[in-house]
Amino acid sequence: MIMIRTTIFILTIIVSANLAGQPYEHSLGIRAGYSSGITYKGFLRHQMAAIEGDVLYNRHGFNLSLLYEYHLEPFRNRRWLTYFGGGVFGGNWEAEFSTGLSAIAGIEYNVRDLPISFGIDWKPMMNIYRLFEIDLLDFGVSIRYRFSL
Image (tube, rainbow, N blue to C red; front, side):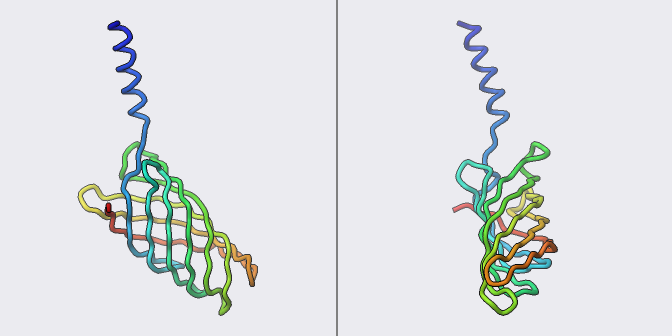
């Protein structure tokens, strides 16, 4: 009986050490770079996946994007996160309404004692409706305020 309890205890410690939950619930801030504007990220409950919504302006015009992102903890702490994902965008592209696909990859740092996160990302875009054009140069830096509801 003691052997069974000890085995269950050890397995519980091993399994719980490998589980990861979301680092925060919501964040809202600004993004500066090739595309600049307002950015929001909300994590899905108890997952390392998030939805990001952006209202951005770049040389093509204003656009709205919605992205699904998967996050990883490369250094086994909740302050550094790497993420990648993709989604859709729509808006003004060379004075015409258009839509397209967008991808994202980046790294984010969450400050321990302040509810602030800093991120650097790359967001290539491919416009597919109205004008077919690919834009690979969308690099940006973001700062967000983290909060819970």
